Image (cartoon, helix red, strand yellow):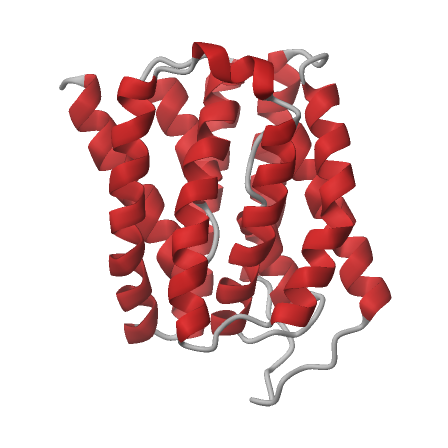
Length: 249
């Protein structure tokens, strides 16, 4: 199968994930770029940030139109994570790639396990945002975004659900604001690594990812938040297991 077709298919899957789940774009994009399209880990993390930045902004617009974005909480998360994301992005180039890959897989697995655990029941009311807790969590997410080259949605969604007691739909929409901000901050420190990006692959990948957002948004409107949460967790566990096994063999 040609690289172009693989890029188109992978982009559609990433777009659906971001549109439906508010995350999972980078955690799916990075393995696809490495294992299907032959990118090096360094190039894959940079390319995934480009793809996810464009796609998450599209998804954010769609979710904002339906009122699923909690702007205050999202702004706190995003603002707290900007400097950590930039600093960690600069430090990431000095770490061995196997360490980054193992850390990526471990964090994805931990996030999945947290999502599978029972969370506080939502009352249907807008939860009270605790600024210190939101800022602290956002700073941690920003650091991981910069270090691992991911948008952070696969961690932001569990954090919003379990730390701030958001219902799943609001967590999905709000996470997209965090993803967009963190990805742009991390990209700002990776300017030199964009020179070797294969735009003939990244361009189509990004295009179908953006188109997939609409389908993902429609999917999110048709299924329950619990099902979305469990689906998200299963996908994360599968990706984490694959990357760990590949790294050990």
